[in-house]
View 1 (tube, helix red, strand yellow):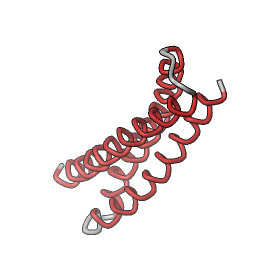
View 2 (tube, helix red, strand yellow; view 1 turned 90 degrees about the horizontal axis):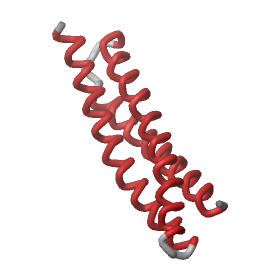
View 3 (cartoon, one colour; view 1 turned 90 degrees about the vertical axis):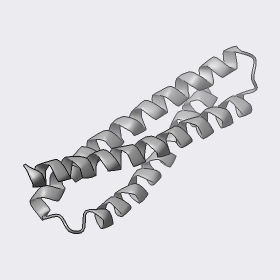
Length: 110
């Protein structure tokens, strides 16, 4: 149980750090938008980023449990789920940023 909780907390922390880094790049990317238009895109990103962080942490918890049931050591199970959850989370954060830019563009055009 301890390795599952540690893996979930590590995944959540890594995803939060990646979310902040992607948010900084998103702010630079949305430099030409007005404040009102950009707020829709930033709001979309923040909501999606929080959903990604939570789902990756829950997924890491479950994956660690699955690997433990399959006979893996707690350290290996935690490591594998942390790497998988962090990599998938990073990809989904970038997708969330692109969706945020898309929403801001739709608001600007509409």
